[in-house]
Image 1 (cartoon, rainbow, N blue to C red):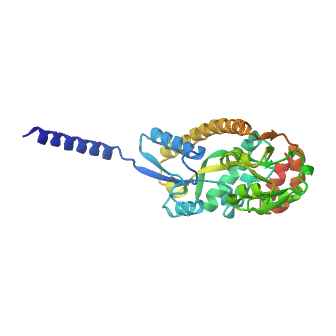
Image 2 (image 1 turned 45 degrees about the vertical axis):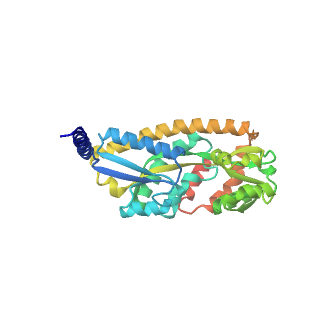
Length: 325
């Protein structure tokens, strides 16, 4: 046998050994997790943390495959796939309100005065009711939640109270609730695609817009806006979810492991979220934007009636309770 032949045999044997080892370690269950964010987004990184924890806690019996950038489909397509068994997990939130009306409570303008206030709801009895309705009506199960950056108003002049809005031409997403609230606050809101906002601010079609700090920075709004007014008018959260179809195929021990992995991912994501929000403010200030404190109580009071008249009758009692607290 030549040296070359011996080497080839050794290599082939090694490949076969690796293949056998890989086969022996193959997961008993693979969960496909699709979400809309890119690889740099904190949701994707939290998904990776979750996958790592699941693998460790189940000794590799369960593997999580992550599909960012809508590569498994758009949000509602993935949810439909979870109902049909072609997808297993996603990150979703108030979009579920068409199926489960209580999901609208995830993003109520001025419903939550602080992150702690929001946590008390999301992690409390009302949060349990929201989750149960999603399970019952959609067939997917929330197993963790992530905070989202509060939405703030940007402009080229300081705005500290509703009176300062005074017909301000501003862009809002095409969401009737948002439109009604800003009208009630005295602004002149215009629905517009996000892709058109920068140019519209640049040419004066609109004078202001509202978004979380991450989008304000990534869209370079600092080039056409000078102020971030800390209205924090929408605080919201979003769920990491698993299909009931996949959930029912797990043993109780594996279900417990998945829930523990989700809890660890939620804790990890919160730490990263708080660090990112602080860093974003510093970065935007370094880019020349001024952060303006506002009279949040005055904004909330002025928005209350518009919010209550815009939400569905099914969740109006809960929204009234949020404003009363």
